[in-house]
Image 1: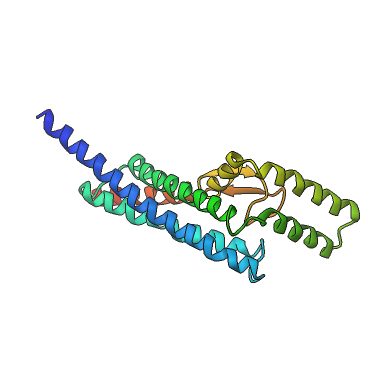
Image 2 (image 1 turned 90 degrees about the vertical axis):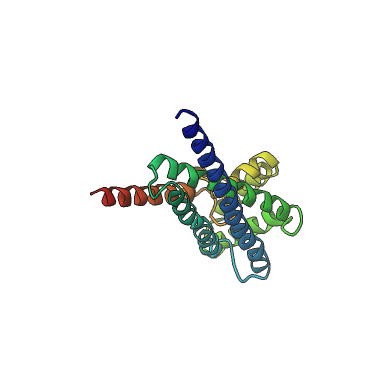
Length: 210
């Protein structure tokens, strides 16, 4: 009577680990593929650093939608019921794996096909300032800001962390691949998906009981 629950618990953890790894890899591949495919579009001028926001965010939403199916599958193996904590844990773990894959993919791209990323981004934002009628002082301030950020971005650890938190829940103040300088970005895709789906299954569970 004591051993059987332990065996069942071990089996559940093994299943959860398998679901998390498989779906995390799927989500990571999707968002990484979209990143790699969007780079040539930036290179050819089809996308700029602002219009890329739509592509970037959309790819993250599509990729992290696998969280819904992962939690549902895990719930089915638990007999149709799952707690908020377990559902949130599964979703968050998937987000972590997808974020790491995405960050690694960007590192590869950055050192191969996107080596001039910071120079191109600097030129874009400076030209945008000039087109908006900015004063010489404002343009100079933008150049200085981008130069400081470019120097910071050369640090592999900082660059990897910034890319990681584009998907992983975090608020960070920096210009990113899909943003504008000095704009506070709220990257909470993973947490949002986890919470919404976890609450949905909790609500569905309560409805069945009533």
